[in-house]
Length: 387
Ligand SMILES: *Cc1c(COP(=O)(O)O)cnc(C)c1O
Image 1 (cartoon, rainbow, N blue to C red):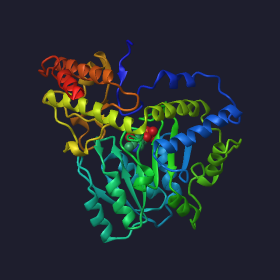
Image 2 (cartoon, rainbow, N blue to C red):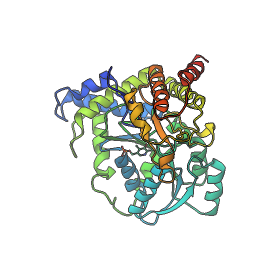
Image 3 (cartoon, rainbow, N blue to C red):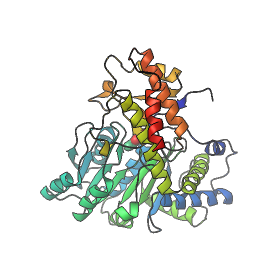
Image 4 (tube, protein in one colour):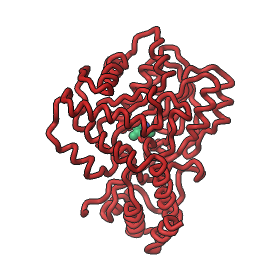
């Protein structure tokens, strides 16, 4: 393959089998064959999130932001008190959406690169009562992984519902939605789920559905209202025709293939592969003398790595990396944007991708004037992979 590998935190490289679905003639959204595919995709989405049959999946045309909008529009009523665990750029977006629907936001903020512990959340929840807690599983702007299990337990003990933004984590980081009692887990198609951009995905707990059913005010968004979408999802899962707004037919077909690929590998294997490859990338980055944004390896994500630029190197170096074979992303968190870059390694990522990207970063750094001995990052990654 002569084109550079796309290794940003989404969109990612998609498998050939997934891409082939995008090129098929588009069937009717009520074609029996398509209904069967949609129904299977709903069931498989639940399995990927490790949620049981009473959890409700939604597959919507839109991006990850629509999935966030859908969760908040339906679960937050004006005046609801919402605690936002704020680990970066996308936590901020969640707070904005909550405010847009009339929720009262309190932020529990971590400095860039830091996380919020379950103990800190318990302290905050002891001060005040909250209807809902939002958590960003992996904040794509810092590469920080939150302790979703511990944070969720803290929130549920105080009677709050929990929405987890898993856009940069789902189908890569360990997540057991039902066992961990997460009320909404949401993502977008173009990240680790491995389907081109254009689908927002959510799975909703029975408890969250009950809160939505008990609303005293109408949902403030027409398109996001589960009142329209729930019967559609139920119909497709029952393998029946139904229509509210046209589904993104080819994307749903592609999603069905990628969910099958994920389940065929097995969730435990998927989690372990992301951890192993991430450790190799991080070992390579460290071997070149670069720091990382997460302040502790224990709360660093396995879906991306956020290396800090060494002295004398800036975002201009990403052009060299691209020429050497990998497309990477610049910084995103406003407070530290110019200080770091981001390497995505999620979805159908392999050991070959890890070696490609580290080789490209090594070569790019040398071209940017930073002295790095050829092969040091690759050797460190290979040693890590051999463990
Ligand atoms: C990418 C991302 C989003 C936004 O998703 P879009 O598909 O760009 O709307 C939200 N949250 C997190 C954590 C993300 O990584």
